[in-house]
Amino acid sequence: MPAISRGACRKCERSFAKSQMTRHLKSCLGSSGKERKLLILVELPRSPYWVYLTAPNTVKLSAIDGVLRDLWLDCCGHLSSFSSQDTDYLDDPEGFGFGGTRERSMNVSLKRAVGNGTLRYEYDFGSTTQLALRVMDENVIGLGSGIKVVARNDAPDIACSKCGGVATELLFDDWEPIAYCDTCLGSVGEDGETYTLPVVNSPRMGVCAYSGPSIEP
Image 1 (tube, rainbow, N blue to C red):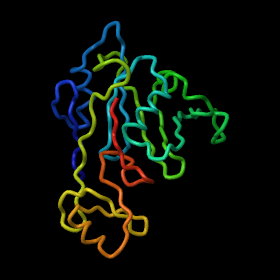
Image 2 (tube, rainbow, N blue to C red):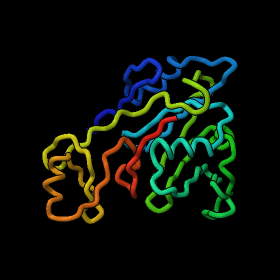
Image 3 (tube, rainbow, N blue to C red):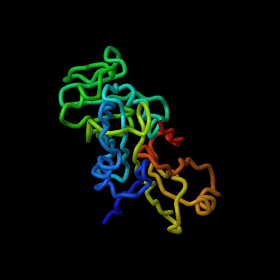
Image 4 (cartoon, one colour):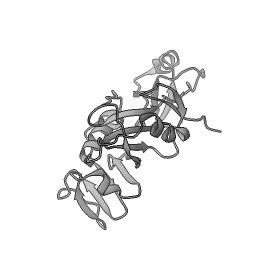
């Protein structure tokens, strides 16, 4: 049975399981009155990776895209998109399209794009990282102006494949990542060159050339 993913509220610093975090944040952040903020959950489904953001009611998809790249994803400046059931929101809707759906610019408000449902977000159309985004509340107090992280998953424990200790690097063998601690990686890599990527708290870990850093707004 997989371990329960937990994270800390950035306001009160208490730790909660992901399943409890939405309810806690609505209570802990409180209602904003005149200064309406959105509470947004972004996650890699069926994984320990998730983050809650607060953002202005008028926040654009392009701003969310920039935050996700800095926080979790950007390795080589790949293309990205948001998608609803019948619309793709792109950096350059005239320059790259998927066909079969309407194409729009990311310069549109999140509320208009998401409606009452969920948006799909994709970074890199080759080695794709696909996230889901939902607005969980529309009237909370943020922890500052603009987009802010208000909760994020704790880094999951990843065991060294050789000794069972805490892994720090992924070594690629026939394109398959194998986790090692620093000590075990040193002994494995003695026979020749190795290609490695660091273990990081990101759904992009081990993909393409992603190695961080994680820059929070």
